[in-house]
Image (cartoon, rainbow, N blue to C red; front, side, top):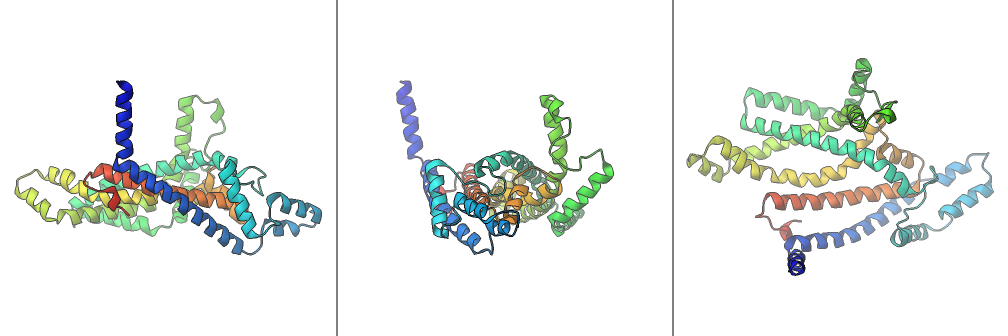
Amino acid sequence: MDKKLKYSKLKQLIASETFAYVLKRLLQAILTLFLASALCFAIIQLAPGSYIDTLSQNPQISQDTIKQLEQQFGLDKSPLEQYLRWLTQIITSGNFGRSFVFQQPVADLLLERIPATLVLSISSLIMTWAIAIPLGIIAGVNQNRFLDRFLQLISYTGQGFPSFITALLLLFLAQNLSPLLPVGGMQSIDYDELSFVGKILDMGWHIILPTVALSITSFAGLQRLMRGQLLDVLRQNYIQTARAKGLPENRVIYVHALRNAINPLITLLGFEFASLLGGSFIAEYFFNWPGLGTLILEAVRNQDLYLVMASLMMGALMLIIGNLLADLLLKAVDPRIKLENLK
C-alpha cells in the first residue's frame, strides 16, 4: 500500500506543471552555459598578453621553464583547442583546470572561498529586504506626508553614495571606534579557542560592517520600488471596491494590495542572487574578507585563464538558478500565475 502511495505521489510530481517547467529550464540552462562559456573564452583570448607573457619578462625564468609551463597548461595550443580541452575536462571529470598563480585546482580554490562570500552576501540580502520592504510600505501608506518625504530623502542619499565610498566611510568609522567594531578580516585572533557559540558571535561581529556596506545602495533602490509598486496597486479599482465594502484599511493594504505589489519585487530576487558574487568585490577588498571577490580580482589581474573562466561560469549559473527560484517563488506567492507564461 505504501509503495503504491509513493508511486502515485511520484507520478503526480512528474506530471505536475512545476516539474515540467523546472526540467525545461534546466535543459535550457545547459545550452546557455555552453554558449556563455564559449563567448567568455573568446573575449578573454582577445585581451592582450597572457600569464606566460608576464613570466617571460622575468630574466630569472628560463625559456625552457616557460615552454614547460605552456605545455602543462595547454597554452601552446590554439584557442579553440584550449577551449575544447577545458570543456572536455569539465564534462568527463569535473576538472575546471589548474590555477596558474596559486598552482592549485580551480575547483578547490573556489570551494575554499564560496562559504565566506555566501555568508556575507546572504546576510546583506536578508538585511536589505528586512529593512527596505517595511520602510517602502510605510512610505507608500503615508504618501506625501512628512514620514514619506523623510524616507525618500534617506533613499536618495543611499543611492547617491557609491559602494566604495560607503565602504571607505565605514572603514574610517571602524578605525575611530576600535575596538568596538573590527577593522577587517572574518575572524579574531583567538577564534580557534572560542566555543561554538562564541565562534558564531565572533563571525557575526566581523560581518556587520561589510554587510552594511553591501546593503545601503540596494536598500535605497528596493525601498523606492516597494513604495512605487504599492502606490500603483492602491490606485486599482479592486482596491477601491474593497474599501467601499467597508473592509478595514489594514486588511486592504496588507492582504489585498501588498500581495500584488510584492510580485515584481520577487522577480528581482533572481538578479539579486546573481549579483551576490559581483557585489561583494568592493566590501571584500576594503574589509579584507576572505571571499571570492579578492580571489577573482587577483585572477583577472594575473590573467589566470581557468580561474577567471570558472568564476564567470559561476556567475552565469547563479543568474540561471536565481531566475528559476524567483519564478517558483512567484508561483508560490500567487497561484494564479502560470509558469508556462513566465519568460
